[in-house]
Image (cartoon, rainbow, N blue to C red):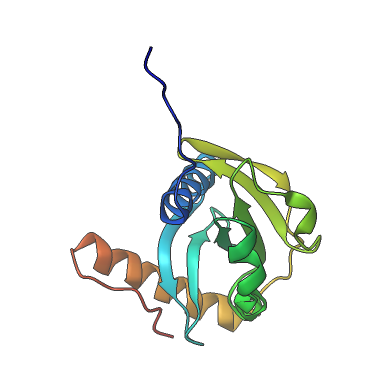
Length: 152
């Protein structure tokens, strides 16, 4: 008799699956997501998405409890989005996450909004600058340029 042992996915595998599922969810909700966007303050957003009404979301993917505990940079994203979400795997212990941000639960195939993020609208000038920078970054990537940084 053969014994099959399933190993838990590695941290990079979990991050990739949650990022993929969260991006698919955002597309289903009408958003245009970009992965790994370096913001003007040097922080890197796992996902940044532009909505159909011009709203900007940032999603921070947490691959596990240790990833959440050692990474507290997520507060630095507020000046660059209207709403902030955490995205976690279905097995993540949700109770340890702060209640303020929104929450997405995702796997490699899709996801669900568990908690809506509070909206903190960007100033009009900041929104315009971010929208232009987002569009330019998306166009560079579509053209095959290895670009990550938003240029305001």
